[in-house]
Image (spheres, rainbow, N blue to C red):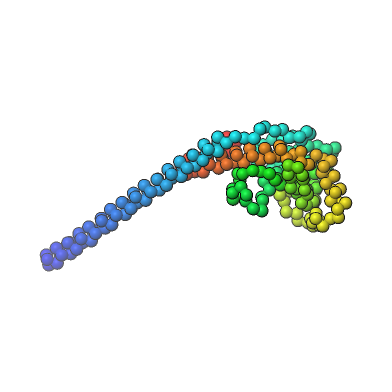
Length: 237
């Protein structure tokens, strides 16, 4: 009986001893994984910091003011809202802008920003008081030309919940290219009379460079703060 008890105790002791090598291996593996993770984080943080400093040293284009009588919308650099506005009689004209993607990436930026901005996409709203809808022009803007892509009626932004572009819920009209030449010329004259022409290009180009530069710096900074486990600053800061 004592022999059976001893054998049973020895077996139990052996069973208790077996997990320890496994636990040691698990602890060693966990420590190794933590070390690798820490090294990867450090490498990534160093790369983000280097790129942040490199972008911070980039020269911005000379400061350019918008052509009169357009004024810059307050807070435009930190939002996706309109950039410029003006009044024309009882009308309010607002202009949104973004980079117009080229068909082929000559600058090698992969469509992710950077490179020369030589063509812009602008969205022009013409609104009137006591009207629930506004006239919307989508245009390509170049240094020496402006081309209308489409013309449509749409709900006013403040009444439709905001946003950069709103997909019309009603018939948007014919393709601009399908209109006869005299009507296309008349629409070009209509926006030209309201100051929508290639004179806007230099300001909007410079403004977009500054906006993209700020966005890129913010991206490197917030990404680094996240990797480092720190709380990103609030938008107001």
